[in-house]
Image (cartoon, rainbow, N blue to C red; front, side, top):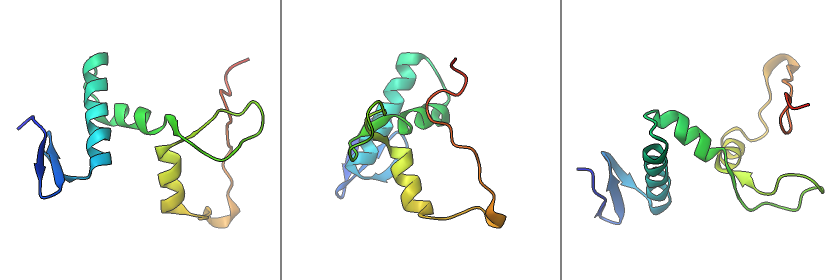
Length: 100
């Protein structure tokens, strides 16, 4: 079935079952983006969409990009204040590090 159906308050779409309304919206957005771009890699498109800064956030310093991404919010919920072992710190890039 390639159609959207409601099943007991949850949705079925493209072989995925028990989707909530927000999840249904996300996967339809990914599916339509793939069709528009003519791409077949669901993972890549899902990563791009989830990394878009579309959620409102607190006030930021002047010049900062407004909003935050689904990936950022979800990773904070999953990882919290977790740290790498042995005090390892990875670099954090803000903006495009390759842009002159």
